[in-house]
Image: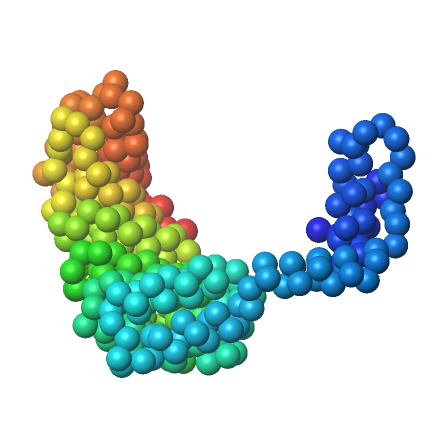
Length: 315
């Protein structure tokens, strides 16, 4: 933030001399009580400090290009490629660097990485896609143009660690960017999410449920599309009362709460067996702090779906 808003704060430095002055001004209260004196820096000391600063400065583009070269080299082994991918990921966490990464041709490493025979390289590439896409419309647009969404959905069926990162990458691409969401729906994305919600892979199940809930809350037509795919019935099948905290149960209940924000969702939830299960969940877990959320979800569903004067909550 610029220092102009606070006249008591030293001005931000713009050169080496300014950097030293800034440091001395900012720390003068910690110095001995006598007045600090800023003197003109002699040429030899200036050269020494300039060289010292240069040795600490990283040329980001150069480092990215070195990592890209390794990743595109067919002779590089998988371990070296995975390490190079980590370097890229570290840099592109900064949004400006992520955009520059595209501008220097960095996206050329993504497709080969997703198709790698190494699970570590596939996982790293999916993490990279997530970092690039998250809350970044510029990169979301160019990733969409790269046409990697079909490959991401394919990787949802990969081994657990890869599938989890694939769901994260999908989530980062489609959230808050409607062109990506539309493309994902066109290739059967909602059906893929529903399949992941029913998996035994807990982390994948939670990530997919989070994405589904987010999309349903943000876009009523997307929620309706999930309902047409029998999402309510498929999630209801996962509701199994437990005497202790159950992450899978909590995920199912929270998803049903989102789906029943429409009249159609409420109608599909009105099942006597589900009502009994919800009542059992409340009875078994009342007073258990760790189960409070699944109790609240159950109570919401009981009130919403099994109260005569409640005809749905379409927004």
